[in-house]
Length: 68
Image 1 (cartoon, rainbow, N blue to C red):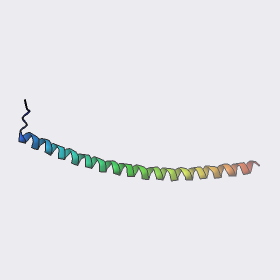
Image 2 (tube, one colour):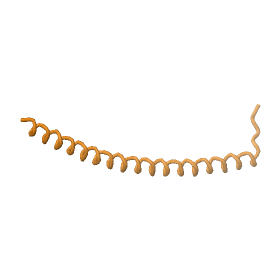
Image 3 (cartoon, rainbow, N blue to C red):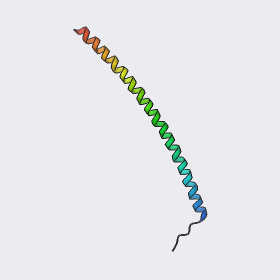
Image 4 (cartoon, rainbow, N blue to C red):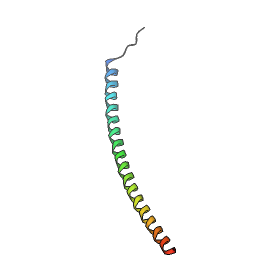
């Protein structure tokens, strides 16, 4: 007993397969874009945190000097 597959079904499956591949490519590109944005924002936050930490250290140092 063999399975009979109509050519129309194969063509439909192939078309759907190609659509899914294209959609996957779009999702991959979108994910890359989001990852890049996240990386940039992380770097901005790191720099901002370093500035805040440096300012806090400066204030603490000045406070200690005034206490002595």
